[in-house]
Amino acid sequence: MKTVGALEFSRNFGFWSEAEQEALLSARVAIAGVGGVGFQVGSKLARMGVSNFSIADPEEFEPQNANRVPGASSRTYGRSKAEVFREEVKAINPDATVHVYRDGVTVENADEFLAGATLVFDESETTHPEIGTTIARGARALGIPNLLVVNVGFAATVTAFHPRSRFTFERFMGLPEGGSLDEIAASTVDFSRFLPYVPPYSDLRGLVAMTTEGPDGTRPSLPSIAPGVDLASALGTTQAFLHLTAAAGVANRRRRPIWAPRLAYLDAYTLRARVVRASRATHWRHVLTAALRDRTHRNPQAAYTHADIARRTPPAP
Image (cartoon, rainbow, N blue to C red):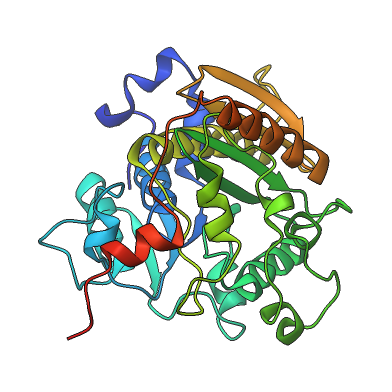
């Protein structure tokens, strides 16, 4: 196994201590979903020194992933995202341990997936809130942080759910707290809670598309671009560093991690960063700003309406 003295970590010590490096080396990180932010979060953590992972993702890479995920390419289309991630980490550190759950996180395997984890990243799809709820409840039972990192436009947000806080994942998502998983599976995520920060340069027609059904009865996936995903992985791994070193008891005058209901955002387009409270009021304040800018013709136009998506969709064979 790699040690603090490994050459791969020699330049880290200009910004963190040997004790903090040891905390990274001894950590175990669980990541649910490696199709976007999760892939980059995991690979960055591996470069930082984390060498023990649990990875859950039931999907395979497709061309739609190539705009933002380093692991998605013509060589990996049709291959398991989790297996490609394991190869990436093993190429960085051949001694790393990467446990793969090809079925994703399920009620049956959640305990095993989370066992021994120092923290968990929930990068599961919002279209399956029962998965995120299963992860959140497991993290609370184990007393570990549950990190949620989201890319939105050229920006990213990060928060974490404290295992003893009354501000739970379910509350953040607008889901019934204490409800059964069947009840939660039938629910939809409340985007006025899930997206406290909406970039002021947004074309809000895309937000309308995400929250309404198209002519075929489905809702489009959350749009994403490479700069936002890159920023999300930087925010997420920085917060993970704070959580992992704190969990190891390293005292080094570091700032505290962000805990819900507080949420941090960083926008590479506006060059602004803030810590805000996750609430509907925060969401609607940002939406109103974007709407006013759009009404005065200050915002660029995107192309993510139902009509745009249908126009680009090739006809069925």
